[in-house]
Image (tube, rainbow over all chains, first blue to last red; front, side, top):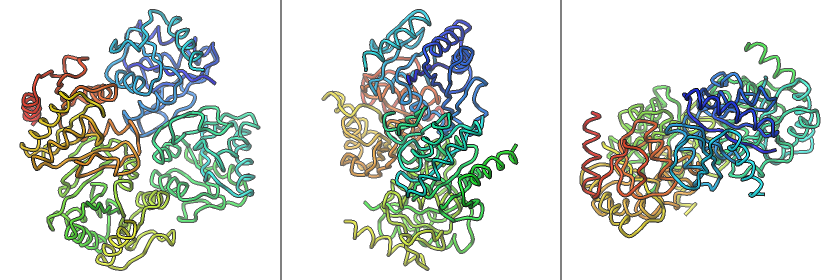
Length: 152
Length: 152
Length: 152
Length: 152
């Protein structure tokens, strides 16, 4: 099974939310599992998009309780590790799609680059040419899937 | 959704393996998600039992690669945290069933007791009266489910 | 430099506190560094004993702020990992002395046994013959030091 | 006691190494404790500088053994957490000085910004105006100390 991580902040713009919803929906349509941090903002919109399209969603949570997860998470992973859970989001994803995002997202992009894991960016941090910048949700998911093909 | 953790060692007796398989199977028949450490022995038998019964299995892995998971894991969570992942298995489960087990399992039982999370034991460490000892797989799953009811 | 971990609960008996103070003091007199979880109870008494004897104390804290440490910690390590920090206490110690203790201490003893790290016990969990039970603080520190010698 | 973190890669330029050595030396001269990741490159040069000036050095290690530390670490903290230890380096430091650095350093800068912890940069990632860029080791340490003053 393919696991695609969607990373982004707990607060986001309306455009970011729409992008995340569509990315989540496309991930589900491609029968991939959505991995995310399980909270609000980008994470919630992506999970909602994935669930609405019949997909499976995993939320790797920073806190101590599963009910910290947004309402669209099927599998809450309760870590109690605070920001250290960001690294688990990266490691558990075959490829990552970053949408907008603050410093937490930047830390996830950095760890992904460190681990040599492909990252597609949609209006996100432009810190390194290895983050492949795209303009639409469809491009993001297609690019992500093509990067997995290459890896195989 | 109910998440039941099955904990036990990467190597186990034939009896332990049979118990784990049946526990996994019953978890799936009750539409609960199986949480485990994702490796061999008890974890593998439980996951196989759950998958054979049409259930969903999550493996919270200690290492760096998803292919470290046994063949019956649907959702591998790659932590890179070594034994610290034990705590995530406990936190992500609503109730735990311990089958046999070595020192790693003992650490999980201890953390569960620390967190006030119910533990059912099947031929496992008998370190505390709060670990509810049972004799059969069926008893283990029924007891686990009844403990969740009480909590709700 | 030798690093000796002292593990025990955040609440303890007067006898436990006295034992911990003397253990800390002896650790410092042997020019070893005291490693502990940095909070109250056994951890605080051991750190106070070590500092009073001119030793160096390290507290590996579960929370988010260094001022969570008791007043006798020279080097606070702030993990933000909650109970997962227990494993770091074990890994960072060459040998462990367990004094009394609850479920958290039991989890540390279990991880130490898993990692093959020697544990000396003073009125603590008696779960395994590999935990060497002693009666006095002096015996505890002498036994701990002798176990390090053997290892080298 | 003041704890200053020095972050940078395990491989560095000769200029970076010289900067790190001088930063470490100045940290020790100011009676502050050096916190770092404990490995080679920038971490090793900073620790060597601090020890040569009579300071105390802490290395928060990613792996499983204390002998993974460079030769200039007084207090090795053995985490077994791989890159998740980066977050502990950030949390355990009152202020951070980033020297050069790759993706791992970028992840540490991001987490520091996320936590609102001040970062001084010397030829490092210029991703955010909140990272205060300086040109010399002396400036770096003076700026770091002044940021702590402000905080108090």
